[in-house]
Image (cartoon, rainbow, N blue to C red):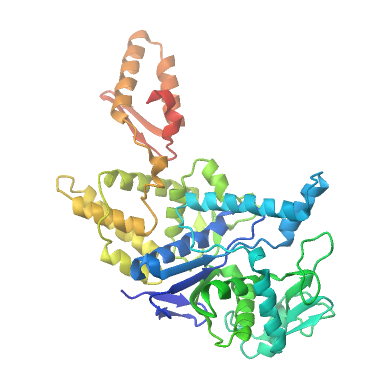
Length: 472
């Protein structure tokens, strides 16, 4: 099949041709592990998980390597550890930082697993690649692309001036005029960025030719991608907020340290996330983490579905209405294929995903397939159901792992019990037991419809079978 991807650097959609079809390689910038992942952090995880699934489907699972890093060298992590030490923890700062990183990585894995994201093949931590970072910095200095000054090492943007800015589409002069950059006396150019910086005794640090210190943020991804994927690989991806300066700086230092000057062949960026039409921020009171939603009873599969409804290169608006509609759709789809086994992915779904990950159109296609099955219940649709299920699973939906929220409930038995209690209430004129039962059902997200002919119960928005308890 043909896969076309929008390459941010070339500003056009390009047919995807891997450097080696037997070894397709992708790097995605991962989180800085100082706190819970917020909803915006999760969007690139889901988007590029779909790409990973598509590449595995196309080239074979054994021929795709996906790397997503953890940044565990960061001032915010240091601050958290220092706060714990100042609160009386007697352990070393290094031990406290390691504990915080381990804790946050555990949270991240649990939250992203809940969204149905496959684990990457490699998840390097920056602290495990300090030697590779210092070696790359030494190469950059030797080639005249970096310089040491006052315990710092900085990349010399003027040494790459002709090429710097190609990803973001801005010239160095424009960047200097409009950017907020640290103007330090040791910088030769205001746009020069830090590769290495000194560490005080109360901060983590590593020995280097330039003194005890720690790496700058940008060099981390360059060193880890080089070590795990080589000087040149296929795809580098991440959120649009990383395009500049992080990815721009990665390109500069990686190409200047390389003999091939290739680095990533395709650059993919997902757009940002909003909440109810507004930018997510703590000041607006609309900031929440993935765990917040999960703890509120929003299934991870529902969060994933809402993400996939919007093309990754468009801003995505999280709304409660979308959440409700996604949950209702997934309930219908799971009921539709409850007796199905996956068998072959729909060719149109594959083609739509191959067209720059058009997940919105792929979901629309699934709606069509589901409608065809649901409107003809008298026909044997076992094969069609299998194709539908396999197609949904290519998008990371309707897997067994994500299905726990949609537990099977014997609504017929519940309806009979409800009717019995209703009959007694009508005779005795004591409606306390009936009202209590109805309240319990509604609290569990059950839709209760009563008429003179009887009662009908169905799973509604926010249905949680675990709340039914002894009622089942």
